[in-house]
Length: 216
Image (cartoon, rainbow, N blue to C red; front, side, top):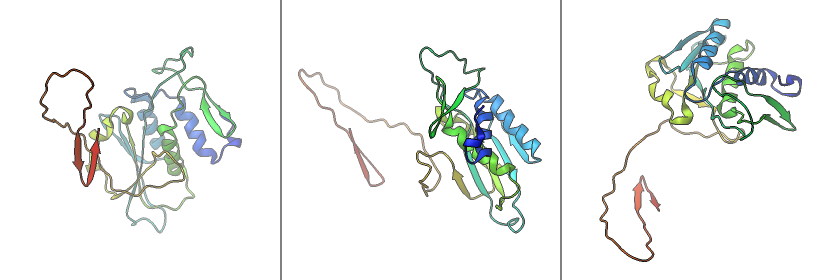
């Protein structure tokens, strides 16, 4: 277990350590989702879990903020499971072995899973804290983000009322990106005429999308 006396805020890293003991590679979401539901029950918070193992936990606004607009706090539950060639671990069953190395938390022989376990830990520390003033919170934990946001695609938006969301899945903890939420998957079919040629050939195509031109 990590030495929480060396890590601030302690509660965040305490939850991160607990989360790291639960196998949660993409496609293996049942246990971590159940942990989120147990967390909600422990703290007397309403929660729902869907067929994709997404979990939404609701917390009322604190005194003076009961009628404020709700805010979504969002992170994903799954992690990328990679290991060093000679390290023995079963990602379907085994815990990660965390340790502190200077200013960094690392996992012995494996990926750390901070993407996006740290978001889950941060959100849980907020949900568990009774001293923080906040509006109503809808904590959204999605699944299988690393393999195509599969959980988010199955999320029933009827269970959410908030119009604003804070997504805690960023490259730089000191940077906040303000944007609209959205994404799109599409298939482009480009008609080509093929002819046989000898020698060197350079292939170029250009696609213009919303004022931007992409060339390869």
